[in-house]
Length: 98
Image (cartoon, rainbow, N blue to C red):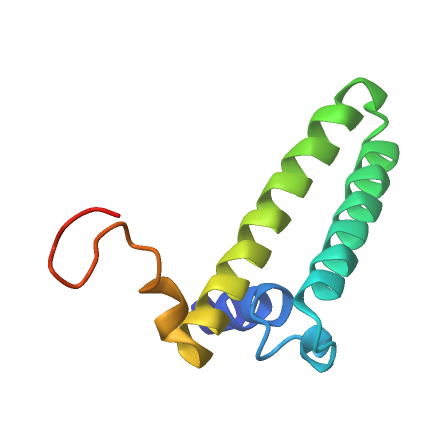
């Protein structure tokens, strides 16, 4: 059961496993995830009949998907261009601030 939960989570949120991995542009991938989150938020609100919680559901899903997308983008960038995080760290080679 635990393995199925992990596989399901990875299928949705892991850019290396999800079918969205074929979208090379991270911004477009993020947009697609946001659109899917909106769709599911509306779907659940309608199915439950709780229109009063629709806005909260949309915001909650948007925040969760955005956090997952930012995490994936950060991990991908760290793996491919780790020096990007070293630049602009606030100190020069001699240890002084710029």
